Length: 494
Image 1 (cartoon, rainbow, N blue to C red):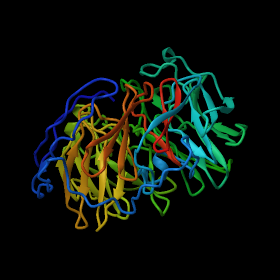
Image 2: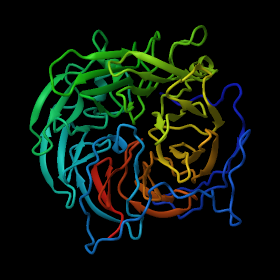
Image 3: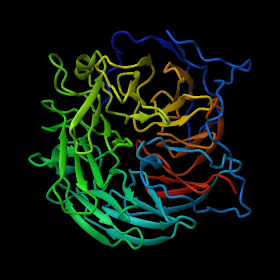
Image 4: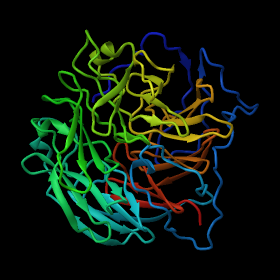
């Protein structure tokens, strides 16, 4: 998954952007850059101050009145990466940052790559040490720890950049069975799916989670797990360096235990990993949406690499989309697989962006094959998971985790897509939206809050170094953040 390609394919319009550039931890307060100008769509309206985009309030967004107490308050469950199967990362009625503060930091036995889940006032986090923890959401105290398996040393794999490797993909909680699911990499180089009781950490079940007939050593379980309609979906890509014979794949396993697994393997000769940290997204009818990385083919028929794919609940291929220059993007390691699909609330549309620089609006009810996008613009290189929210008056807004600074993209009720503000270059972390604030965690540990409408910086706080693609969990008046040492909690409002 190395970063190389830059070229956007045929028929995409050019865009001029100005990105902020400053460094440090935490960054100095900064204003968002001027909005992007995108042809053939009208340029966004800019107020006289030049502060940013004029955007109607996010639908339903309203700050919650501060509580009398000054600590973390437990809130609604956060059961999966970005809060729901759509991966939108949006909490409409959350506190805006009146006085954010670091509430607690709890060290664990390894780095935390995946986003925690929050269940009944308990933060459940999984580590590269091969353990799962239950933490008190208010105090950060360890309620329980379950060590599932010793992690693999990086030297046990043919390539990669995670060392050691234990549990990497974000866990998921299934309310129907009251279980948290995680996948370990463990001795013998294999992947195991564990079901853990969130109340006490007891292991309820364990089973093989590998694609039958493949070499597990060449497959990395990086993406978040998804639970939908009685199935837990486990995505796989390759290790950093793309070594060995691997193909992007998804394994579906019954949440109740037993039963035969279902599998999807991208129909390409090699590569096309399903590796984005956000993992598969789920649709209301049970279908699953994934993005795929660059594949081996650089000519000939489309091999469903560099694509947005819709799969049935049984993991049959239903439909797909790819840019017109998918083959050329394959040749330079540029693709859509670095960021998961961003589903737009209240629509049947999704935004896809990746390493190639293009931002594509696709219709999930008719993806259209090669060149089948509804709209496209030149945007950025994007890595991780995006966030999205409905907008009053119709349409939606998405926020993409770009390596050149977080990018806002607006989609109108008519399906027209325009670029909005771009954050300063140091603001690249996978965002969530709480009320009218976009929160982004950086690898240097800077948690940055931006005004969702204008991109103006509202808050910054240092929470401890994080792994790449880290993103918060949200519950009550707090964010729960995966870090290189454990979990940090930030109280957004007293």
